[in-house]
Length: 500
Image 1 (cartoon, rainbow, N blue to C red):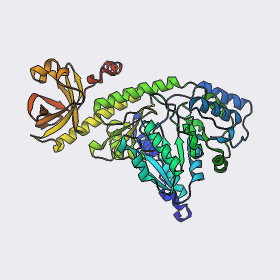
Image 2 (cartoon, rainbow, N blue to C red):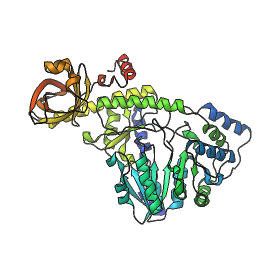
Image 3 (tube, rainbow, N blue to C red):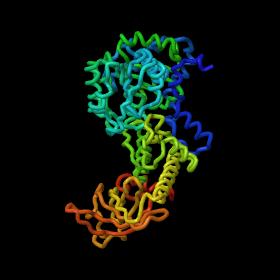
Image 4 (spheres, rainbow, N blue to C red):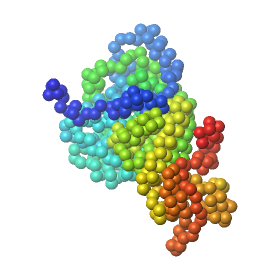
């Protein structure tokens, strides 16, 4: 029967994010940090206008462009927030950003065309591209601190390049493209004349000074298509409501695809959209910020690597040190601790996993506790497997300096606290005088043992000489106290809960 199906479906994956989430739920995971769905109900400010619209009989077909009052609200919002002017005929209401993205790509692409995809990236893009017969050209920005350089973009551009897709803040990393990255993309589009699709679903969930969207480059507006969704910033995921901004010449074509896919967006929900674009999301953003800070604090204490999340509600942590792919890591975490994260392979980056922190705080705390136990266990296993041997000299880095001791990371293997009492007399009296954050030291292994490694610390001076500064049992768990100066309220909360 497969011969009766579209052959291109062979290149289209099911949504792996939902596949793994379903596995976690069916297995009985108790702490689900998987989907990017806000834990807030839609505010009444948006629900009541939609209810009123139903009462007023707004249950008939609407314009394929969308209700005029909602498009006018979009027009005002974009002028206020992104400082751009779009005519009403350059604004189309869509079923979330998903339908808008699909309609835009179908409108643009022919078989053989190439689409530049900055990875890690949301999987929708490559799978819709596959349906069109076009080709994805992946650019791995994780190699450049999750930013775009001219060299990497130039290497990806060919005479078949039709569009580049950008998402900032990014899903799954929470990183934001800086001004230099945006300028590189702008210059490439200006020179080579290809499209930019800017997926701006997270552009209001920003914890730094908010930057203008890519549409600020109005001199190339003929090549810019913006796809926006109300799902994430307004806690409206079930509404399936968004919009597209595009030049009139493109809008006249994409409207055909939109009409044959959905005809028009539900009329009565659009009044809720009007209210949303006037709604202040600051309290929700601040709630996400607090959760972001908590997760970052816990991950720093675990000494795992991740790009610092400036927006959205995700953290993308490296699991490269554990020697397993991301799906296996996440499966074993579910089985061992009942904690569910999303494998990085879902975003074409198999040495990372995604944490979603838009969940209840109790779930987040329990999830981080389980993750720390799991990571600690993997590091102990790695040490006991012969990773460290007697006499080895390992390079370490000081990750915290306090009056009671220093925190040290041994490469990617393990981290721990060296108490001041274990140091030589001079250093033990005032560690901050002799040790600096980020300082590199040498560690000589005395004896590897279950649960930790006994070692001697040495500092190597500029001229190559060294001297012994102390010995201690170095456990694979990292202490939280080194972070007291940064986030004292979370540390105290953790102590009150008796989980540190």
